[in-house]
Length: 380
Image (tube, rainbow, N blue to C red; front, top):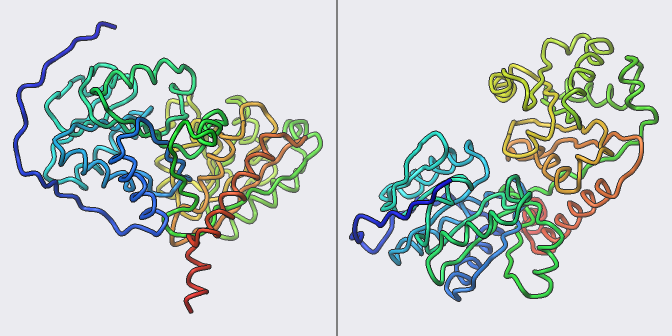
């Protein structure tokens, strides 16, 4: 792919103050904002923001973005997924009503060099060269970034001399954590969601002969109990499976063992042509159960949500994937609870690590006084 250097049309002028509409922030978010601003002022090269799913990390970055814009610097927000680029660009326009926002992905087909704020996919960001004062990389551990470190080199090329980078993630790799512990990378940890309730901790259940029972249509009491509980609470549930072929297996099992649920069960995988319609029906409440693969481990939020991972011992469900999957639950402040179950034939280090990390984050949130339920009890 050819790279073309396009010079800006001219120096931007305007008022030094940038209008920003920021929602009310939680105590944890306020602390993170202060640390990000301090890091920016110290002109350090890289900051890792480890923020749990549903913590409101996008809004936490708005004050730092405004600070750079007020200094006449340009900012790029980079995301691995086109859908997220569109959503973040919409939120940016609402948060910064007086600032032009460029939205750049494969379907826009344009580069607007002179706009101060750009939201782009990873691939499209490589079309810029020495343009930005600050680069914010969202979901920095997701595909394609996690597959090839050369993407990060390309992102660095988008920065001017002295430019700074922020990596946002809910599941930093172990190598990143080691660099933080050794003092090689600055970091901010946000261990709690914006509504101040603890993260749901997964429950692990061993089921002997799980796949054989599903193929035979035999009883799987744990799975039946889970689905009955979801129905009783009028909730919704993701059933995650490791392989695309497993979706029909689980769908057939539900039709045989729990036929009353079959009309409200859908399937969504990367190979289903109607997946967008199916996901929309699920999010709007027309479907109650969605059988899916890891394509929906990130970025989907539904109220009154529960999660069950069928075959959680499969290698595709590593620690990060299981944490992201568990993060689908409890995001709604009106209903912050929910069940997360791991069904497997054997226990794995990935399951143990995911549960250990979630519990550790909850303990840290309590220690810092970020849990609203605990704080309210103390104040009353």
